[in-house]
Image (cartoon, rainbow, N blue to C red; front, side):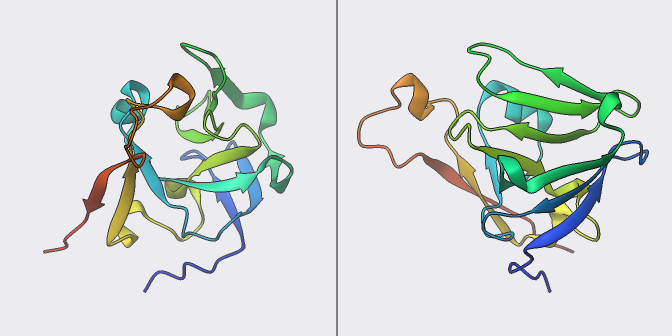
Length: 143
């Protein structure tokens, strides 16, 4: 059973070059996916952490930055294995989104369902009047 109340946890990329410790803003309850063009291709589930609440323990020099469009969001990857570790959020630049697959002992498949945000109609782009910002829910059903 997934413990959504996890406050602090260690994380690493696939090869272990980038290692970090993070204090989550709302445990695992902030887990989400996004429908924007970039997130659709990346396919990661992210949880939130305030900017001061992630410490890169090792491998900071191996982090590579990717930005596009408005360049508000900053996406960080391990330059050795290519795994997305975290990003400074566009919808809340005071927070990072942290890849749950990088968190010690957590798998994206541990979540029975994950909220999917409507990144195509991003709030920073004016969004769509009357829309909630949610696009739906992604569910994993184990066989």
